[in-house]
Length: 627
Image 1 (cartoon, helix red, strand yellow):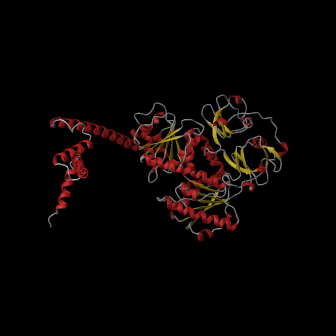
Image 2: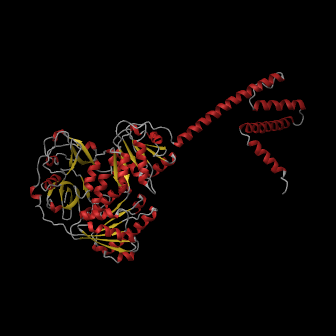
Image 3: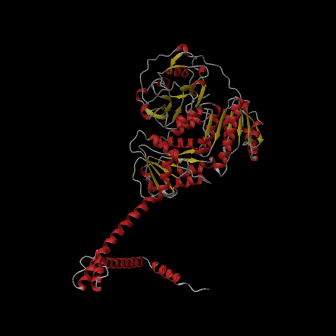
């Protein structure tokens, strides 16, 4: 082995001295500075003296330049002991000034690091706390900002196990401006009670728990709920918590962790209900989108003492710019589309669809309706339907059962999937089905050839299910390919049928832009919108539960001829009265082929009741009914 060179030995020695810490750094800095100043001072003396300066004069000049450079005060005159003391005093001042600057710099740096860590406590009151991080956080924040648009001082505090700056930048990029709503991000574990205290849940208006992506999301939600409810610093009163449950089999455990104060959203069950209902009625997806987001009309509850003692049927006409749909009794029970002769009692609240909570106002009505425009009650028996399901996942069994609850006797359901286990699961469901005849075909739903082997145009509804793959992007890609094939085949055949599909990632849903009202994509965004609605009013859980339940009151888009005659000018009061006489509640209408323009696709929810209208054949009335 060759001996190290002088350069290597010098470098090694230099590295060793530098590793001794701050004193070595100060020593090297002083040495290099002194050498540099002495050399440059000597060069100045040589240049200025032209080589004629004496040795003592040159040394004196070098000393003067050194003293001036290092700001050593009056160390150029007096005795050498005096000069030494002056230098010591100057160095002491320099040391303390440098130490002060260093401490200030370090303190500022530490504060910046602390702020970046996002560990400072949130000091807010009446804010909304969001625990966890997933793609749902963006629509949640966006909708909360819309909900707070008419309020001052709205705040959303997000706690997640991510870097605070990264969270804020991502929210700014995806959500954009949030108006009056401030978004505060903090770094911490949503399953740690100490970390949850950072976002001050004790003073929050509501808490939204998000399920993380990946395996076992319900387990994470359960631990988060336990961290909230079992925290030693929890408040005395109940919390208003909204939390999702991905798998219905885990509902009991999640309910036990969150207690009665938690509003649970069964993601799979809600998604299944939305898929079934929107697949059966063209335009219903637009109605639900309008009800769930804060951009249009929403459902509100308000007390109106002036209606006490009057019937709900009379209350339908009492609100010129809102649509009454039910009552919340003084005891807390929610009645959606009860008997319209039901009397409004003291303490009851009116449940209504309106643009905002401050627009649910009563107004005068002259009582006039266009009697000649009201149609006779038609006699329409339910007809069997044909539905095609492409794909299979854990929600498929729920969808099949709910399809059976909605279908007329003699209806048919065909399932095509590349999962052999789907056939066995369908066989287990068959004995409990009352109205559906089922058949299963093993096949790849992502190929045009496989789809063409079926007479797609013969089906009234086509449902495309997203696979339960760990890779959500791959599962969404398969749905997107199938959806594009179906749209192309529909365009070529000229036959129209409802297409409802699922997608996991909302970004993929935006890629598959909806071109028609009966071409609907169900994803996590709708569930996020529902969670925000429930965070604003926990009692809406019963309202939406009833709307999605085939055994309760549902929203239907029925032919206009079932209520009023086309071609007759009238106001919406006449439509409301025609529906009331049948025991239904009219909340809007949809024009036919005249105005099929996105995003409303001809759907008008909660129109002004005094607006003049003339319907045409093919138009529909949006009603709340039980059949």
